[in-house]
Image (tube, rainbow, N blue to C red):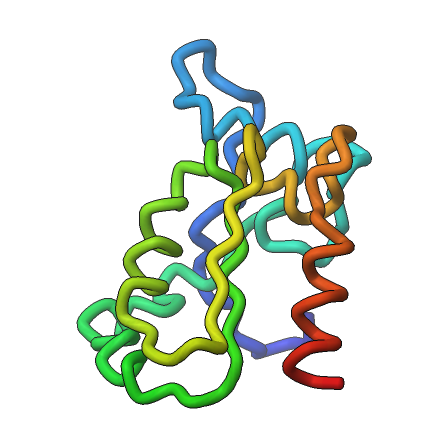
Length: 136
């Protein structure tokens, strides 16, 4: 850091060490971001997080307000065991048209779709078919 340069306070990355009572999805994030599986020295989740002010200004933004107007092909891909799966289902429910696809990967958690999770969780064939059909 240069002399006089202000460094914003950081929010902290994924908790480390992992508390015994950590929720299962925090354990999933720890297993990814705090191990060689997904650690990177410039990753906010692996290190000290993002600026504490971060994206707070977006909390009241109606992110999906216009989802029903999307005409392009959309695939919503989630692990069915992901803590955030309901978000994908809610987003998908707002989409219209016959060029939309909801893909739920059985037994996969959120981070399994980053790298397969050691259990081949990424449905490559499904992705390829979708892209070839709508983008080919």
